[in-house]
Length: 463
Ligand SMILES: Cc1cc2nc3c(=O)[nH]c(=O)nc-3n(C[C@H](O)[C@H](O)[C@H](O)COP(=O)(O)OP(=O)(O)OC[C@H]3O[C@@H](n4cnc5c(N)ncnc54)[C@H](O)[C@@H]3O)c2cc1C
Image (cartoon, rainbow, N blue to C red; front, side):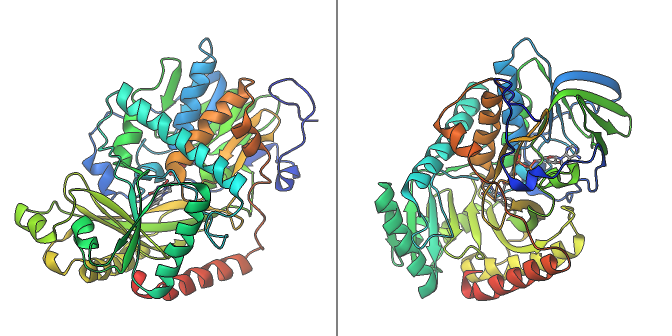
């Protein structure tokens, strides 16, 4: 029988997928292997990674995965339990994983792609908004408090459409935002170049609440400002786990024995025996140009920095960064083991080039300096996992592509729940049935790949 970490009462597993018992000894079936070419990582302030672990160590709390979710969970555990030691373990360097290689939109608004108006059930949307705003607030405060130099700007975001189908999405989302009482501005084709330079789009829905960040700079700064009772070990991939009264985490040079284990390693949670066949490691790709010259900036026009997301989820995300580079993100691949594959970088950089040239004919000759990929952890029902995974094992997993704010708030709230806190947000997260189960292989890969191909084809000019 599994008991609540708070009051010791018997507890039912949150998701039926989790009723499957985890094997006592689990070989971690796949380890992260991101490519070495992420622009954000190389352009953010260099730091000395914390030493990897060797030998044997015991700890009350061990958190695995130092992305937004794990950094937030470790920080909050340290604040909630100031007399206890928290160990945070990261397989790569902080900033090298998905948290450092995303497009850098810390988004406030809910966006339920399963609903006609993208808002859906209003009570759920309100809670989702509150969660995202809480995550944003935590990040804003930490950036200010620790003076983290991560180009954070309250720039809002443009959701832009080229084709009629995309314009219909914007209209539907506008109706949803009315229902939710959120501010927006519709920007018409003629006015758009004053905002984002390019004449490419027909219409955009501007919402003011998004913060834009340099993601690798932010996570590096978060790692370097952790409370004193957190020990971070980088470049320490956990390769095997033995579950029991205590959890033994094995790696190449030793082991760490945890009273309580917190998993914040997104889709790699499956490699630890949880939610197997429920999360989808889908990669998406980005390129970053060299800085624009003063002349190129003048030819581009528009505001000094901005972010555009596509009306079609398979379309192209764009940013003009604070240091005057253009970021292009599009294209997807399904990498079931969660590891990057060089063939996709070669293929998708060409697509980035085409998307860039269609949008910025005035920027001919502006090369990409970096192209990289990174994993999203998606669930077919768009739900996340929060809470108990097995006796003394807890998790906040499956960020569904919105991990900057969501990962931050769920990591924080998981640590609060573990300290006995109860509130409406925690209740909401605990009540989620979690990611649903996928069909078995080879049907799964076939289905996901067909879906990705069809989606990218259907995106047409939006890509
Ligand atoms: C190109 C791209 C663009 C994106 N754009 C956005 C965006 O604009 N806004 C947004 O909100 N989200 C965006 N995302 C998604 C966002 O990056 C993720 O949702 C977020 O990183 C999830 O954070 P996390 O901390 O839960 O997981 P992760 O960032 O994946 O962190 C998990 C960590 O666990 C570590 N780990 C895994 N296995 C082990 C092991 N065995 N031992 C030790 N450590 C392990 C990994 O190395 C990793 O660092 C984007 C993603 C990509 C790839």
